Amino acid sequence: MAGFEPQTRPPTPMVNPRVRALMRSPGSEAEWHSGELETALMLSVDRRLVREGVARRLPPAWFDFRKSLAQGARNFRQLGPGGAGSFGWPAAARATTGRAAMALRGKLIAQRLLRALAKGSHS
Image (cartoon, rainbow, N blue to C red):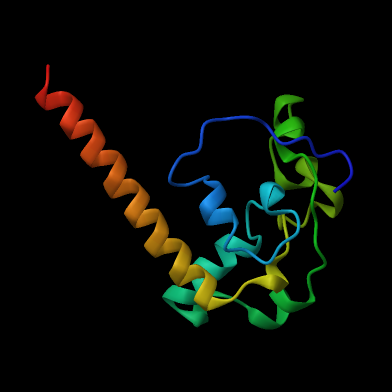
């Protein structure tokens, strides 16, 4: 993962260390569009949404896409190596990972909503 520097942001239900821990990717912090997690989510919803033969053949593509965005990249060709638009390791995706990630994200979102509602009732 040359050139990737993870940013320190507070975890959210969508970008959370517990969700990333479900992934097989050794570069989970650099997974993004059409990477392992997005592909896994689609597989868990409907396998027909994924061209599995293509996903299995794509090599891992880990790089600092946030840095590219900050430097003005505005499309996939500018964002990363080869301009394929796949950022991460789609070949690692499994439907079971997608189901587990959706369940965990749902739980994290519910917890966050309940905390926000509890705060609001004390004002």
